[in-house]
Length: 531
Image (cartoon, rainbow, N blue to C red; front, top):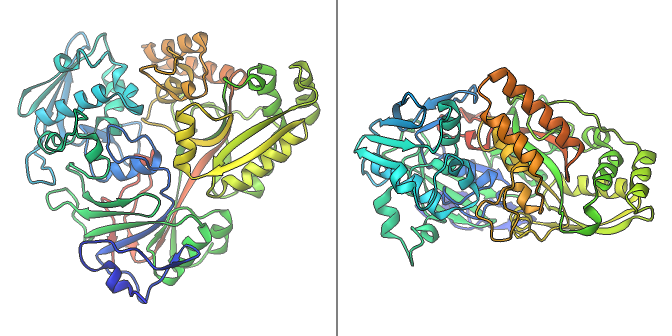
């Protein structure tokens, strides 16, 4: 048998002997090593200018810094991180950032040149999240002229039109704006990829930790950045991929894990009131939804969208499957965001749903495949959805896969229906309006590929309304526009929003300072200490 001491000592992360997903151990975890049990199978890259998944975003935010970051207690505000100060010119088109003195994990100083290179790299690579910053008019052709280092401490950004500095800061607080070390990244460039292949499984940041190793669907090991801002006693954070929530709880109870991140309502109810554990709870900006691919003929009629909405038992699923982890939410802005609509107009009405199916020409229903994540609670919810849709003639074949496999299929536009989750990128209503409503180019080779694009959904009217709300200068009017847009969208789009996530992290009483954020990038070990 391999002992925990042998597993955890030294620089490498040895594989755990496992049975049914539970790795063996002989003692409590060391005081300077935090062991986390978590589902991490949705990660495809740890390059901050490519990664676009919740877990990847969380890991990246613990390894990299940005010019600004969301306030830990109120994400509607932004705090300085690498930037010491910022200002805008009279036309609100030229923005100047003065950098504070920070250091990369290599020991080199963070400069404005690194910051400029990082933003230029994000635009030129044009991966999934690039739209967050290219909406300011930055392109591969002009970004070198519009994002420049005036000197070692001064970064200057020039947008193509007047821009609210608050909106710009929200976008720069997202991981797509993370600053990487130019010298290290380019030293690992292969065939002009700007270091992408290397940075997928390595790090070059100035955050609290650096990447020691990542084994897909197995483990992530973070090591203390000796030059970073972390001041606690942790030297390593080991995150083990444990799919089964019951196994996560058992590891926590045995002292083999310090934090369990994905307990379902069943496990949370089982330890309610147990003084050996502390439960951290936060309603986060993550929505569970069904995406209906508009490349599938049977899913193209609005009456079918409506029928599916009225067929589902939202309250029943929430109360019986996810009572402590999700709440019913039916609009594209998460509760807690400015302008979010929390109305829940859709209730189970089978007769109404059947009538809508008949109106659409599908009185006899049709066969369809629904992809969903294999981790709980998705299988149980998928079965409930399958039963509800079966009652109105929609015969659903369920197809479970790892999170990242479902996402890869959606990004290839190959799903029919997908039950998945969407996490908001920055704390502004435009974040979700942009990805669900604005799809200017529906071609397979489109430069911008928002969430709506994945399902071949293009609606110019919604796009125009989302842009009008984004650009509205009057704050109160802006909120009104977003509220109206959400109500219209929830009635007339191929996206059926089901729930908003209430995230839980259950910690040993030895652990303090772990934070859950409204956004996944706010999930932080920066203040975590282990007794």
